[in-house]
Image (cartoon, rainbow, N blue to C red; front, side, top):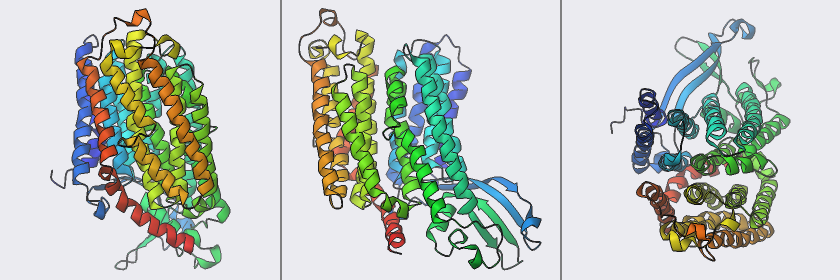
Length: 544
C-alpha cells in the first residue's frame, strides 16, 4: 500500500461506508442489513492486519502518522505583549500508533468483527442496531489512534452514546436501568477526565515557536500528546520553571507538585471507573447482565481496555514519578480486584455474572503489571488486556449462543450440554481453560508476565495475588463443568449445535487465543520497543 495513503484514517472511518449503505437499505430486509454490517467490520480488520504486518517496531510507528491542524482558537495576543505574532489554543487531527496502541487496535478490529457476526440473533430494528454498532466501532478505533487529548476525548465520548442505545433498546428485561447506570458512571468519569485534560493543556501544553528568519513569535496551548509529554519530562520546559525563572515570558503556568498529583489522581479515577477499579465496578455488572451478548462482547473485550489504555497513556507515561510513588497503592488495588472478583464470582448462580466478576478479577492482573514499573510487567499488563479481550469476547459469544437455545444462563437450569451440543461445549471448555490461565493458551502468558514483573519489588503482594489466580480456576471450572457435564434437563436434549455463522467467530477467537498462547512473540515483539523508550524516560525522571 502506498505510504501517502492515510491508512490510520481509513481504518478509523471505514465503518462510515457501511453506515451509508445501511441508510439506503430497506429496514425490512434484515438479511441485507446484517450482511452489510458484518462485511463493513471486515474492512478495518483487513486494514489493521496489514498495518500490524508492516509495522516497524524499531521505528516506533513513525511511518504511520497523520497530522493536520484541526482547531486554532485565537486568544488576545495584546495581553502577552505586542511582540507576539499569534497567541492561540491549537488542537490537531493527529493520529499515530506505537507498540502500546497497535495490539489494542488489532484487538478492537477482531472483536468488533466477531461481535457483528454474533449479531445475527438480533430480532428487531436491524437498521438502527447496525448504525449504532458501526458508530461505536469508529469511536473505539479512534481512541487507540488519537494523539491529541481533545481528539482522544471526542472519540472516547463517541463510544458512550451508541452503547447507551444498544443497551437500552436491545438489552434484556432491566435494560433501561442498566443503560442509565452506564451513562451516569461513565459520564462522571468523562467529566473528571476532561478536567484533567484542561489542566494538562493549560500548563504542559504551552509552547513558544519563534522563527529566526522573520522574528515571528507564536505562543500556543496545544493538545498534542507529544508536546504535553515532552514538556512534562523536560526540566527546562516552562511548565517546570517557577515564575522567577521564565525570563519574563507571559502565558506560562508553573505546574506545582500539588497540580501534578491532582492531574494524576483525576486521571486514575477517570480511567479507573472505565477499567473498572474497585469500588467503581457496580455499573459494569449491570451492563454485563442486561446488555445483548454482542454488545457485552465489545464492552468486556474492548471498552474496559480503553480505561487501562488511558491510564497507561496519560497516567503512567506522563506522570512516572507519581506512578512510582503510588506503585504500592496501585498493586494493592489490583490485589483487591483479583480477590474480590474471584470470591464473588465463586458464589454466583448466573453464568453471566460469573463472567462479569471474572472480568473485575482479571483487570486486577493488569494493575499488578502496571505497578511493577518494569518491562516484563508492562508487557504482561498489555498482553493481559489483549488476551482477556479475546477470551471474554468468546465467553460472552458462547453465553449468547446458549441463551438463544435454552432461554437461560442460570447454572441451575443448565447441565449436560456436552451431550446435545458437543461443539459449543468443547469451545466453552477451551475458553474456560484459557480464562483460568492454562499454559499454551493466551491467559497464562499475561498473568505470568504481570506477576513475574511485580515479584521483584513486591513479593508479598504477588503471593497474595496468586491466591486469586487459584480461585479463578475454582469458579471457572465450577461454571463451565456445571454447564457442560452432569445431569441434563429433559428440555435441553433436543437443542441443536452451533450453526456455521455462529461457529465462525468461535473458531476465529479461539484461534487467536491459541496463537498468542503458543507464540506470544507475536505481541511481545511489537510491544517491546514501544516500552523501551518509555522506560528510559521513566528511569531518567525518577533518577533525576
